[in-house]
Image 1 (cartoon, rainbow, N blue to C red):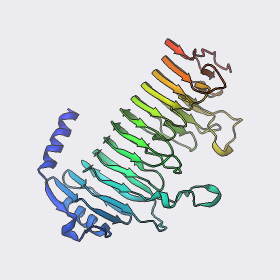
Image 2: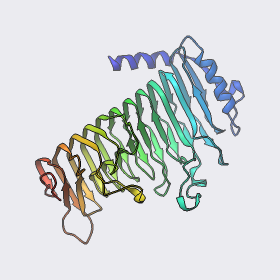
Image 3: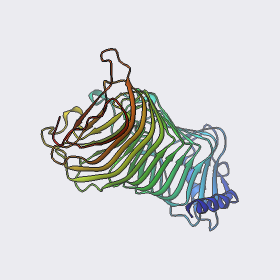
Image 4: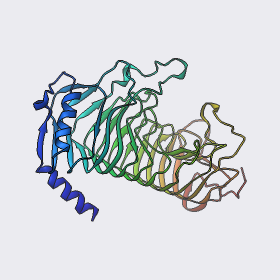
Length: 387
């Protein structure tokens, strides 16, 4: 039913009325903020499916908000290269899409955030929290983002908030390993989000999943460089919603700081994360390929002596193979206050590539994993509370 709905949606958009930004004054090598918003406003008011067109060419763009609701399905088709301004700007997001039902963003174009001109220029903090995110998708329902690129965002490339049934397909993210705080796709308080057949190269998490995220699917993603694919960190704030139903499958992760991980803060507020499954994943020279980290405390910004109060349950790591750049290839560091429940590890084959240890290792604490299939390194099967 969902596939049929999307097919009908795309057929209707293909027959849509076209609103070319050129007719609204949008010209190459100029700021198209006014032209883009004017074209979208008219298209959004159309009672029939519509398409906003950004033709081939290079354009400048100051921060904009593309806001609905719209009267019918709408597509924004970007064929050109859109470049962000580099001067200081108080905006938290460069391009925001919000409150739109049946949105498609497509066209093969590039959103270039010009982050390389500002990374690492905030003194001792090394990055600026106020720098804008490239693309935000806030309260989008039944959406599709396909065949576009986010390049060199100043901060996160994509932030998804309060959205439902939003798909990223053949989406590309490009930023160097040294880029600061440039998470690829961050998902929070959303349901039914899919990232499919996409390539993410960045300086932080390729995909990060925050609180109140449900039914999130990451498949066919090539990740690296970056920090891997992460759930969390969780438990830092009060009243965080539960994380339920995460699937990461058929992915390749290369030259990253971490592989697949779940992280929660110690001394945390209560929370839950359950039904999380990581399967059929290739690791190439990856640090910490399989990781549950419930003592996550970067820069010592927490009381590490108090246990995390986020309950992790029903987790599986299956058919994961490749090479680890760290001696400990499998680490399950669960909370001493609320041990992990129902963790399954099966068919793991990870080899340590370093010179200081002949074999990869596994470490477990406060977890009783269920082990099956080939296990390299030999899987720890520690009783609750063991180190």
